[in-house]
Image (cartoon, rainbow, N blue to C red):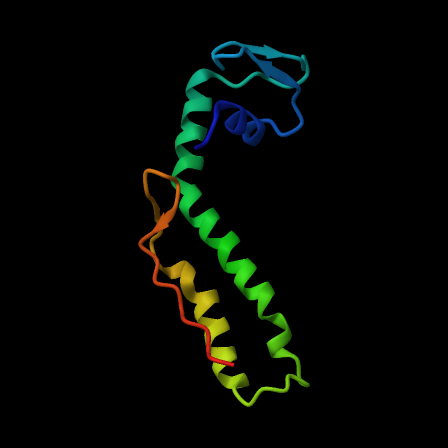
Length: 118
């Protein structure tokens, strides 16, 4: 879930501010940085919300790539290095799919590649 504070940080990364406990009132601490309008904040929340499934997809994909980096080394002892290269390419290509989030914030609509057997 994208919060108002996330949108403000995205709009004004170096601005200092605080929000009331209910998140409705913004106490702006920077005279030299213009306070964003409520409309700008709501538009940014919508933008970040729409981008969230792909952001989460990339995080998970990058973790899977990191976990298999060692298999691309020239001295990888397995005989299935080509299969691992294909798997890793499939992971890199996964961003062509259209992820969504379910009501619990979990990724849906993704067909993850199956890693080769060792």
